[in-house]
Length: 159
Image (cartoon, rainbow, N blue to C red; front, side, top):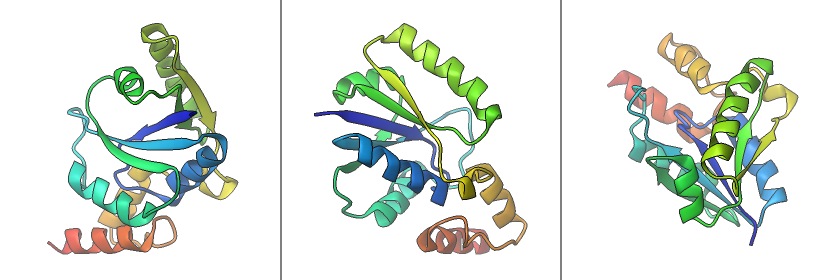
């Protein structure tokens, strides 16, 4: 079985993330969407909330699983018997960071390949950071995220 890991903070999951998941599904027998816990970031949604939102959005999609990710990505990939890591690239600015990470992961574990996938053109400007900024400033994020995510933002911002 060809299994891939698609890691990220998914804070929040965007339509661009969903596009990359669909592209990965066509290439692999199974895709594990790994929701990262990162001590360096202050997430808007908790790990549990992010997993719950992804579950609502992905539902029972064939060949897609969700899992929390804590620790080294390559260790997680080996534990999941995955041969690839999926990373989304939107622009040249993403490439430099992602390229360094891919090389480091290869150094740590040569059996895990990094595959770069580009989302549809309409999502190349989209990032979780920008979505959070728009939402915090009272803008409409409904065209950038699934309905349940926009609703969750609205509830959380209203307190």
